[in-house]
Image (cartoon, rainbow, N blue to C red):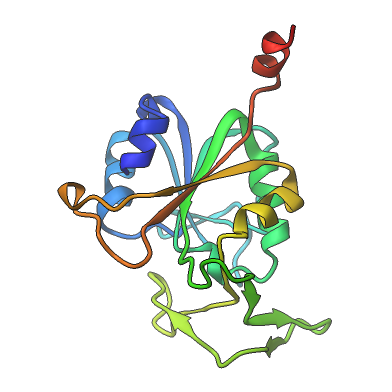
Length: 202
């Protein structure tokens, strides 16, 4: 939440989409203080764009939002569960307004090693495990969420290759903010406003 406050201090007036929010912390604050807050979860057998139990049904790989309609996409430990991160990063970029951002956390478990795919889908849509299956908690499924990618710091390069946007990695180790853990990186993918670039040119 500190990063959102610092980068987008007027966030309460923005259109914010949060994928897979939880019932605590930043999710609750965004929900209670942002008038244009849109929570979503992915319900595999429901119509995309519809509402299920107060949340919009969205698949990050195929968002139903219009082009340039979202100021901030927010996700907390979601991008390690996507089968096609390239599609997800492209969709996030497509739907961001110029000047908007994707602010997210993801476990950087590989650090300076190359990111590694743990599971993929074959042509029949079946899961193929390339590593021993690993699951994280899921707010809408007691079975948990399969980890599909072990990310390293090269995630920024992967995002740029997917959608052409630059990503900042912010590492916060500050006990005064209650932040001290192994995975403390926050990533900010910015969609630069072309008008700003044009005005800055000589």
